Image (cartoon, rainbow, N blue to C red):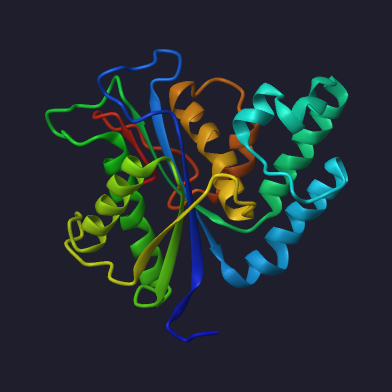
Length: 247
């Protein structure tokens, strides 16, 4: 392996839309999850863990786990209409998440509480900056901040992808609260159909994080399984400006 490459890799996904002009009252939050894996354990434990899960339920590993389709029992996940199979499937999936070693760098914005006078940016930009700052501090403590580190994001469309790349490059160039460049951070965009275990895990974690902020008293089995993986805390702080992230 190239010695300039770092030991960690990060996969990102979001839940909810980042519009502040049209807020869905049924889900008025935007959540961004950056899931960080040590490459060695990702290859030796995390990927095999999910491969076995896929073979167990589908007989092949070409399936792409997608939270929305699982929840709606669509496509390949129509098998979950059967209640017993659904309960077994969700229990095993949550066990996969719980036993796979990774760290979640999460930020959730409650759009109805966001004070736009203080934060005129869109929620995606705010979440991305906060998450990247936490990742940088995480890597710095492990003497990895100068190593080449990749962040894998899902493609969302030409215009949105360009905006994301521009915002990412702005933040890592030094436009952040730490006032430091994250010059070893690089972004890669992958098609949503890419059968990447890391991307699928990020997809599976984003909505439980959003629901935790939106409906904190509602039962949330998936969140319970990933709670200890959240960087910095096992719960979200509740500031007055509508931005929730571990402190």
